[in-house]
Image (cartoon, rainbow, N blue to C red; front, side):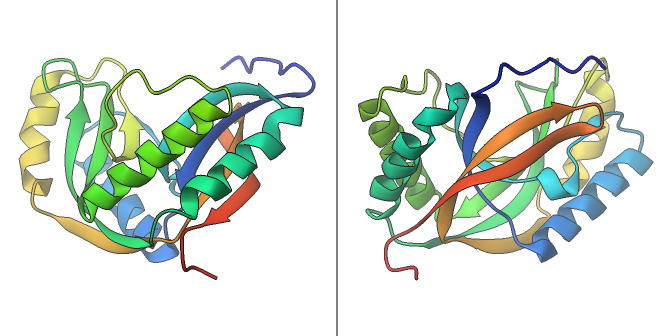
Length: 197
């Protein structure tokens, strides 16, 4: 794998909520099970699993304080909320699956409000709005040429499985560095939700 050389002072960034260790462990076990059942995917490393709220792409390092301020403003308008990771599905569909994900249930309306608030504040800071509708999920892996029928045979067993719950208490701005062994994420800023100390 060729690793693209980064331009000095330019950071590839995204905003996400972190997942607790027990949920990461449960999701890693699911990935292992799915692999044993024949699914061939580029699995997301358990330590890299997170709930992406907005991908910012390449930004200059001097814009990090502006992004951090936008995150603090948005986060301060939303209470902490609880989500449950449950079920497994694919994007865009079973005919040509590309992304394998764990779904989210619980306070999904609160999640959508938080994402919209982040999008609004970041738009005010000069970033484009999301072009597509937000669908909260946890990316377990990505497919190359795995046939859809194979996926369709495996997924029903996981449709009603619950992997664990977690509380969204803060949002984090991460830098992503693409390395030969996968992306490495570095925290750049953190913003607690309303009422979280």
